[in-house]
Image 1 (cartoon, rainbow, N blue to C red):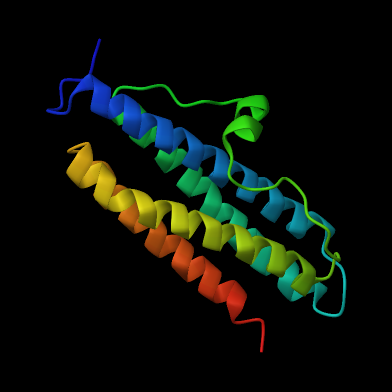
Image 2 (tube, rainbow, N blue to C red; image 1 turned 120 degrees about the vertical axis):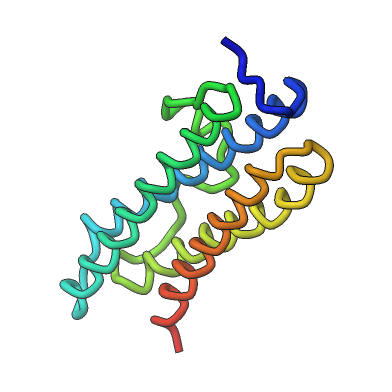
Length: 157
C-alpha cells in the first residue's frame, strides 16, 4: 500500500534516493568505526577502544532511524554491502595508522563529509520536495554528526 502523507510519489522517490545514499554513508562509517574499535593500538588503547564503541553504538541507532525514515515515506531501504558501496560518498579504506589518532583523522573526514551532505539537503527536502518532516529529521542527524565530529576533533591540538 502506498503512503498517502501529502507528498507526491515523485517527491518521496527523490527524497528516498538521497536517504539511500545517506544510509550507505552511515553504514560505511559504522563499519569503519567498528574497525577502529577492534583494531586500535597504542598508549591510549583502552580509552580509544571505549570511545570508538560509544561512537559505533550511536551510529547503529542512526542507521536504523534513516532506514525507518525511508519506510515512513513509503520506500524500502537498501540493505546490501554491494549497494552501499555503490551509493556511498565515502571511501571504504584510507591509508592511516592503527593508533587512535590515525583512525580519528579518517573518521573525522567521514563525519564532516556526511555533515556537508546533510546540510546540502535540508532546504531542498523542505522547499523543493515539500518533505518538511525529512528536512527536520536530517537537521537532527546533522547536529548529531556535528557533536560526534567535535568529540573526535577534541583529540587533536
